[in-house]
Length: 64
Image (cartoon, rainbow, N blue to C red; front, top):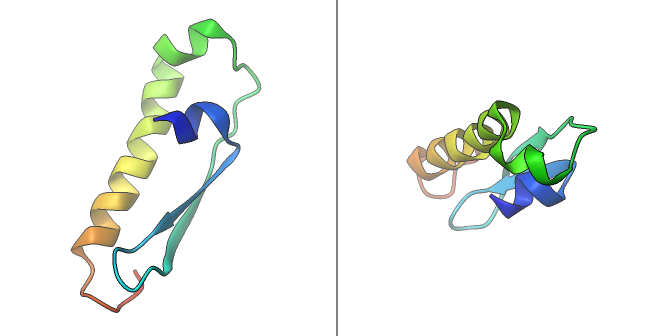
């Protein structure tokens, strides 16, 4: 996820109507070339994936 690599904060939104479902804080001081292949990066990438799954499972119009 580019959002994990480039950001310190990721906001997750529901499909429709686009409401904020959650906010993820990416706490990593090390953003060098090796970060993208690290276990830490993989763990951070799971956070928005899980949050997006949760947001898409929520009933339409409901915030999770």
